Length: 297
Image 1: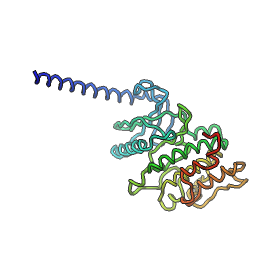
Image 2: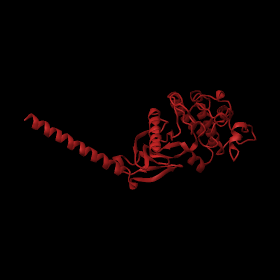
Image 3: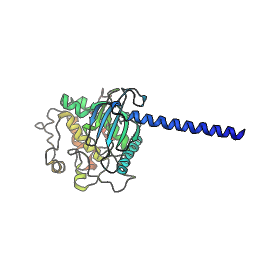
Image 4: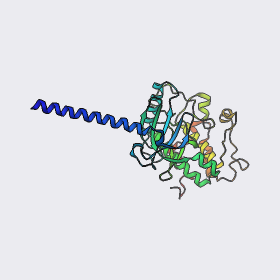
C-alpha cells in the first residue's frame, strides 16, 4: 500500500511538473507574439520598445512595456550582455526615478526586458515643445540627480546619460533614468573600456585618457541641462570631440544661455568642468539652489 501511494504521488508530481512546463511554454509564446507587442514606444540602434498587449503576461495594458534587443553578436555574448543589464537594473532598483524592470526573457534571436511603460523621452518632449522653462528644466534635473545619486551609491556608473534615456512615466509623469546597457560597476569589473556613450555627451577625460568614474555621468548631466534649456548642444558638429576637450561654451549674455538665471548658468558651468574633480557629485547637485527651490518637489 505504501509503495502504491508513493508511486501515485510521484506520478502526480510528474504530471504537475509537465503541466507547469507547458504553462510556461504557453506563457512565453503568448508573450513573444508580435500581436501582443502593440505600439512601438521607442527605437534605438539595436532595440525597440513596445507597449505590451492585454493578453501578454495577463498584465494590464497600461503599465508595462517590453524592450526587444536583437542579437547583434554571438548568442552567448548577447545573452551575457542582456543578463548583465538586468542584473545592474536589479541592483539599481528601489529609486522612484530609475526605470523599474519586471523580468528578462531570452529567445534564440532576441532578449526581451519587461519594464515600466513610459509615454515618451525627454528628448521627444523638448524636440516638440522647444526649450523648457528654467524651473521646469530644474525639475527634470532634480529627478536625474536623485537617480544618479542612487546608482552611484550602489557603485554603478551609467555612461550613457542623455535626453533620449530620460523617460516620462505613463503612470504618474515621473522622470526615469533608463537604458543601462552601457552601465558598469568599476569596483567589481576589471579592464573597463571607457570610450563609449553618445557623441556630445562624452566627458573630456574619457576622450583624452580613456578613463572614467561616476563623474562622467555628471558631465553628461551638464550637457543634458544645457540641452533642456536651449535645445542645442554645447559641443556639436564634426569636431565635437575637440570641442569637448578644449572648448568652453559661452556663458555670457551673448551666448545660448542668455537670459538664464545665474543659478542655472552656475550649475551648468560646474557640471561641464573639464576637470572631473571640480564637478559636483550627484548628491551635492541635489542641494544646488536652483534644484532645491520651493515648488520643485
